[in-house]
Length: 104
Length: 148
Image (cartoon, rainbow over all chains, first blue to last red; front, side, top):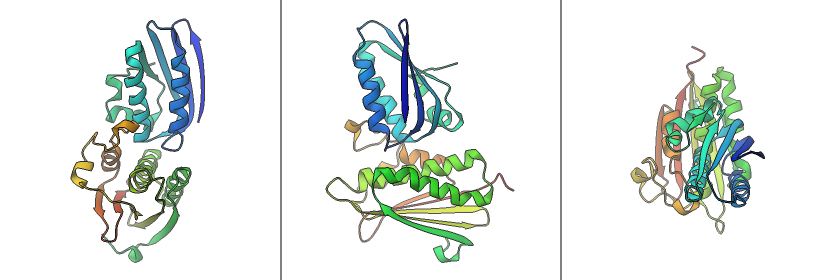
């Protein structure tokens, strides 16, 4: 799994590429937490670009829910961008878009 | 369910219950199923179901102290893929409860509790039971319709 991020004003863009499963989840969790912990407060829009994620299972859902629960108190609003076919299907099935809206 | 020996084509895989083997396991099963000309969606369904079953064995069946093997049987007959994932871990205390959406015994580890729900959604049949000599067996089937 490859993770890159960049800031555009108050918007934090995180681009993920690879497979998100039990094997890669600890790295994804640590990377996102490291990026997010350095935020200086205030509302932040976190955009997770999943266009490069070729595989995700329920472990990935757990990672996303975990980040939501951990950072919502810090006013971090998470959005999901570019999920591909199967990843999008899993996100829809599990209702993730209700708390992390999909944006284009 | 047919006996494993009666399938037209089949393969068997035994591997250490290690996270690093998870991607290998689902890719091997998916590659074997390519002979039925499945759609990308059908292949992804199978990969996800296998990944969920193998993850369950590693995370819930075994522990850091007790490692073991996972056996995967894959058979094909009349456009139907049969997959059996077997571990010799601790077993599941309440299978009906474990199959409910969002149920997890490890919420502190950020588990979504959606593993069995995804298996059930992506496959045509799902059967889960504790083995007499310990551990869990997950049996799943899926008809490949895209080549009909």
